[in-house]
Amino acid sequence: QVQLVESGGGLVQAGGPLRLSCVASRRTFSNYAMGWFRQTPGKEREFVAAIHWSGSSTYYADSVKGRFTISRDNAKNTVYLQMNSLKPEDTAVYYCAAHWSGNYYTSSNYDKWGQGTQVTVSS
Image 1 (tube, rainbow, N blue to C red):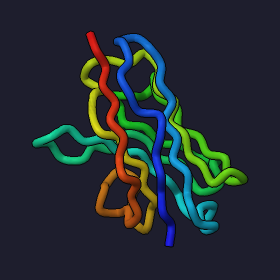
Image 2: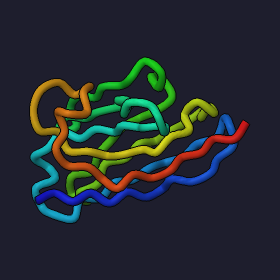
Image 3: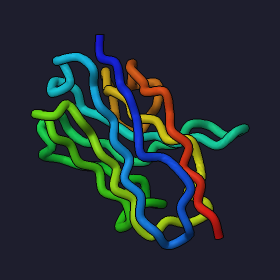
Image 4: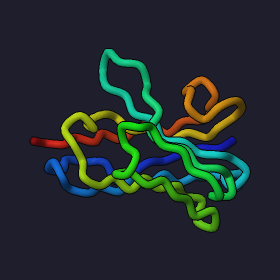
């Protein structure tokens, strides 16, 4: 029902900014809380940030708090992840996802996922 298409990944130097976008291809986007997760090969998918469907509340992993900002524009069916002060340890495949039920921190509580976009931070 909700299909998510990501963009904005790439190679960036440590300390630099990058903005990821995730566009929903269907019209139910505004009814979902949305999250960003990231994953490195061999590791569990890690929570990064989430935002309530209305945009009224946001949540961040401690590792990105103060550096990353999640936002959404429901009129454009788009959720963003603005990443600043990037570190090499931020290197991962980043996924956007639509929340289904339960807390925002667990990947299994999301039922729709984007294809992922690679973010590589060079030192």
